[in-house]
Image (cartoon, rainbow, N blue to C red):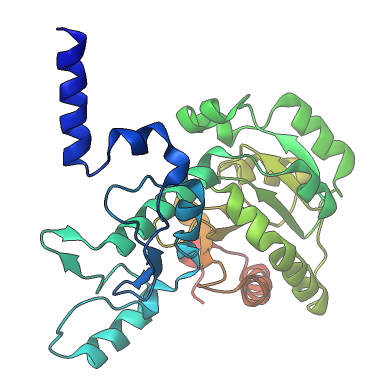
Length: 314
């Protein structure tokens, strides 16, 4: 192809884009963007004129607010509902992705962005480790299971149920022998849950146990821990009751949910039915301080009745 033919094609394309060759040669002479336009969801975006190159300042000025701050229980995007008030009331009682509306056959843009943000938060919660400085600031020492990495933890659940030899020795050395209750924290499948809840949850449990005059051992942190590692910890410490505070598998409603798994006289290989569980501990569920008081009460009842799990009728 000759140079003149190529130039003619370029000129034609630029003409169709409403941009002249002179404008292309001098991008600094671009026109100012059009005034801001109000979108339907109340979010202001700047819309550039046709043929105008988008500069970084235009893109930054058009950023959306932090969509993770939106309470989806109060978000109602269905157009022309039959009974919006009744449906919205039911929606508020269960933080599910309901009433998010559609644009044709797809979700609206805002719910789609919220979905992607929640998915990203869930991935971060699973793959990130709990900050060791945070753990130490909570007054907890750190031990590790037989998992040597996050990848091993995710692919070998069995190794997350067993302490490393070093961890066994550390617990024997640093923990109180034969306490009535032994409490520890594990990262589980959500590092974000530990960071969000332990600062309020653990002190609330200890305060509750003290109010009942119940003796407890030395709390600590287990890295790459699964729930059943509490059975080995129970045998090592000789505790009557062992309580695991662990980050739960994140979903698309929250990535910071935590659970407490509590067992009376736990032993390695015991059936799962012997565990009592208090779940959904997070800011939009059972708040950590309230959960801590409830856990202390459960432990008190467990010690009185000397059973846990399905045999414990609360």
